[in-house]
Image (cartoon, rainbow, N blue to C red):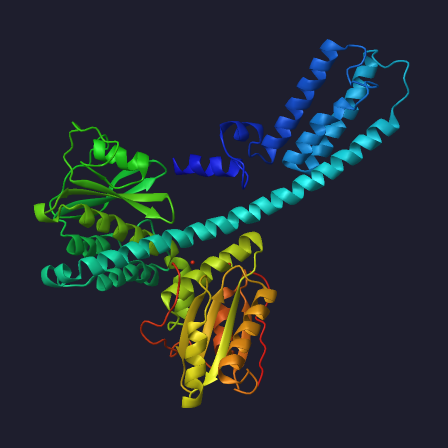
Length: 490
């Protein structure tokens, strides 16, 4: 289901939607595009031959009708497919000439030369916009991941405030402890095995979730595509057999949503042996597993508790999905916060796949009282999309700002804005206040080493640099060519 949805999105443009639009402009490339070009051109020339056997190329009719299809193919698939259509039209001249259609006419050089130029222009237009659409889709995927993580974090925040008193009375751990344990499960599994397995650390994760949501009997199963693998990945409580045809299981697989007896779209007389079935969703809508709950206390069987169960599973899935990338960074520099390392790894991947630049800006301050107000003002002035890490070393402290989708020009504008703000509020600038300025373009390869080199230039040790509790600013849970670029003023 998720794969078909992704194919539909790829088949549309940025503003193109609907069943008919996808039929008129389908997504195709490579062999499919070449096959469509051959079939379309052969059918079109065969139809023209059947209607006008003496003029199958539609010459001298007041408009070059024969070039419509090559132009459309060039706009849809690019220059190479358009040139292929031109070559087929050229082959049609010799083919129909041998059949006697143009026995008395000379080869129309200007007709083919003008048509070729028109197809090349259309193909160049198609290539440019196909590239722009691919880059826009990559950016949208990144923003979807950020939005999905932000939505989960906001829901967790609301639940934690609404149920803080009950959690403290009925459970030995807080929601913050639960989230920390879920994140540590996948990270510890990577540290031991060196790689992320399917649903890594599932058994300790299920124990944490069962304690937080008071689940008595449940089992976790991996999902491959749209089918559930029969082996139990993790279980808690008495063992039970999985019924893949159970209404709750089918409803969860079809909708990728939490399934229980009061779920919308479920038949009122549905017979089930389970209490709830929660999807394990990585990112926005990628199903990697399902949690089947057979038994839990009646007082815990509330809508909010089931929603919390689903969000915890999604939080665990995101941790498994990104554990490999964050582990590589945090292994080299353990002091880097998880949210900063996660977004840095995502942006390095984005740089590697699409070439879209992102940047890291580090402002380094001395450890003295005179710089305290300047440092706090810079911490408060971050942009909404940025991920900020206020780090403190042995002799200096720095404000590292990860700026997604920002090139060198955006970094320059950011530095100008910060310096203007300091000049307006404190009457100083980077040089007068002895503030060091370092920048790093997030690379596609060697991103971890580049970040560690930046920390060394900032006189921060990746093993010792720390951030004050609660000072990491990040919107959501968020890669790469070139070397680290550094500049120091003052």
